Length: 300
Image 1 (cartoon, helix red, strand yellow):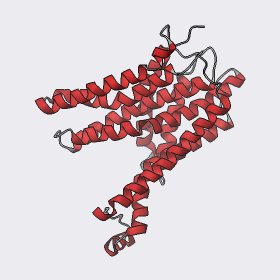
Image 2: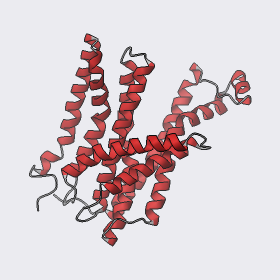
Image 3: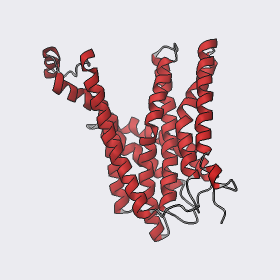
Image 4: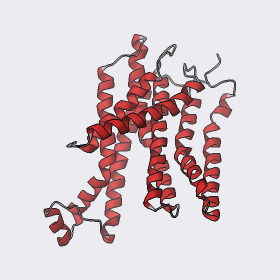
């Protein structure tokens, strides 16, 4: 049976993601070096776009090529990545502008909003499929999540550039490297979990429908999202509780969160990394459990 990935041999498909990642990395590094060497600011959008889409596109290619007997076409995956990601960031921006003005728990509100808009986008780009399988739900969910992440990363890179006053690209490159490293355990992972639950319920009923499992998954990924966004502040607070100086304690008593001092940087980074690692492990654990319980092994 021909697969949705076309006539390319399975062995070649399994390595396409690496070609995309390696080739994109070379192009991105070249664009950074040429921009710095020539001072040509017209190349800055090239740096931003290549750096922001590098890992998300490679991850989508990996997900799409590591599947068998799928109802997903390459065309649908491309549309979901671009269209779903764009709809997600636009809807999230509008809703956050309307709803976050007086939010009591802003990080939780952001998590609930962004995971909701990605779920809606996932439903939209799932319509019309001939059948639903949990594996396809994971792939399509991750695709929309990575599209959202790529566009969000390009925005953060642009903000970093503005903070430099249009100067050196160091902050832009640093922002893109960090977000590329973290990309596989952020939006892509959370929406993949939603896709797994959505399509698992649809596989049993034959059509997309809400379920208690999907509702629970939505709340879980929203909490993971909120914790991820809040981890920087949480790490600062924990660092203060463990190592605060008398001057820092005085500031905290007045409701001011003090800056991290040089001797505290190691503790702060360790706490922040540990917190992010715990959240990533929870998300990955849920996704692995979904695959083991509901996804049949791929045979080639």
